[in-house]
Image (cartoon, rainbow, N blue to C red; front, side, top):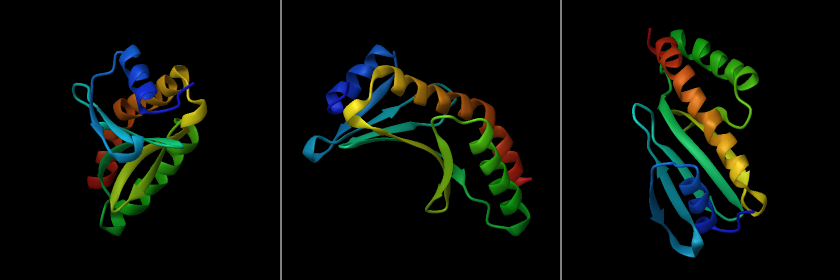
Length: 133
């Protein structure tokens, strides 16, 4: 069970994830995960939460694209995602998950990251098309 950012770092290493660690005060840390041809995944450890976040892209600004995009995000939340969900933060579509640090294990972190990996591969082109065309 994870208790701090060092435990999460060990999990990421054991999962074979490429990342850059950015430490903050109070034992908090952010891990920036990178993989070829995908968006950067931020894993923020700040007790009692581990937050996983990916910026997908800007929200559509016109009515023609807003409704279809937001509808599709809700559909994907309901049908394709188990550990993460789409949302909107500061005008950006994000894919995120929150995990409890005190009982986090490597399997739960791996399942969450896999859910996000699959979503990035399967959804981003479709969402971009809906939001822009």
